[in-house]
Amino acid sequence: MELDYEKQAEEFNNIWKTRYQPPFVTGSWVDNDWARGRTEYLTFLIRVRDRGVIERIKDTQTGLAEYICIDPLPEDYFHMTVKELDAFLAQEKTAPDEYTEEELPTLIEAAEDRLKLFKPFDVRLEHLNNFKSTVCVQAYDGGFIRNINGALMEIPGVKKLRNDYPRFLPH
View 1 (cartoon, rainbow, N blue to C red):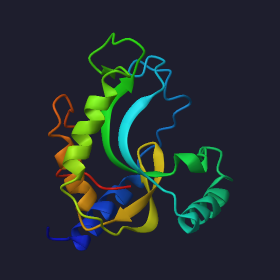
View 2: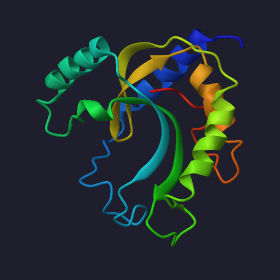
View 3: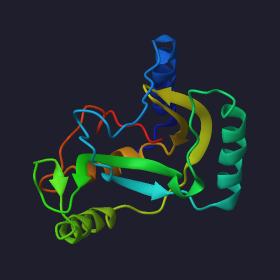
View 4: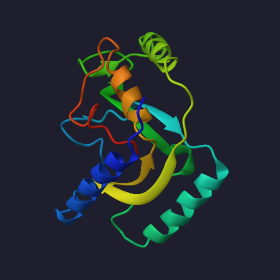
């Protein structure tokens, strides 16, 4: 796989240019027509467990916390997004965008099969950026996570979203 850090930097710079658009402030992301009170949104992610990285994120959060529009998240939430499923976990399936606990093992097994195709890789976390309603850290990996995102879309029932492979940027 060819690594392309320059392309990633250019794509992150394009997102940064959107910072002048009016902010999108979410009072509660579950109280809307899309979530309809559902709170367990399904996402494939890489948990951040490195204490040094966690402490740097927490230091940054302390600086950002002075802005009332920023709500820092607890450290057990620190992660790099790999693929959003655009689906929720539900006790009983009542909508097409829901998975039940009984369906999760099949989904996880299919994801594990695809992840076996990838070797370990390094990620550099540099610079803050902002998506429409989220402050994030840019993750430079040369394209590994983007390719994993693409592989996860091969799982039956997993939808391709607007910002998925080949556009996906790890964050």
